[in-house]
Image 1 (cartoon, rainbow, N blue to C red):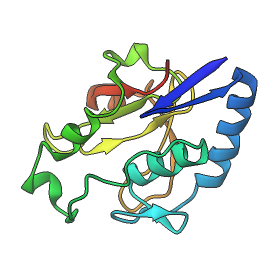
Image 2 (cartoon, rainbow, N blue to C red):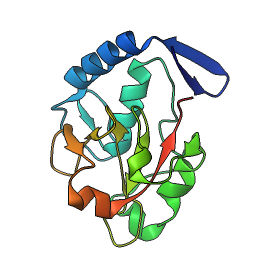
Image 3 (tube, one colour):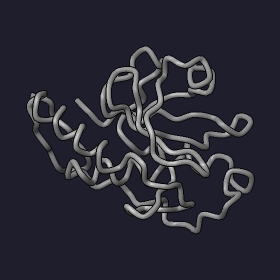
Image 4 (tube, rainbow, N blue to C red):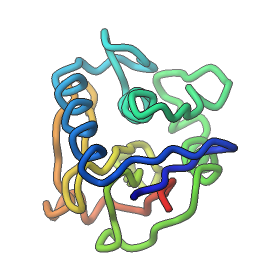
Length: 156
């Protein structure tokens, strides 16, 4: 049995049903186009993927940090994303410690955390990049390992 937690709620899935649920969610989300600040099946940004993914599991994550998100938020407030992520769960550490449902984060612009995804296995993650569609990536690629800066875990 795997226990998922967020705030005051406990969610329980046996490992087989969780695996099936994750496959269903991947099927639903894969191919959704990128949209800045998108949080719907019509378009998502990288946080939108995570938001919808966990929503499908019955876990309500914050839609955003409550402020306006401009196209160049990462230049205006470089600490914004990481300060919000740090409020979720616990730090994972090294990418070799990643597990299903962890939320890895990456620095795609200089040393600023600008990208997140959700782990769908110990090595594969679901994410979206600007001007792309939701797709599967792998931490096994050297590019992602170099850009990896940490991850948050909301699973016990």
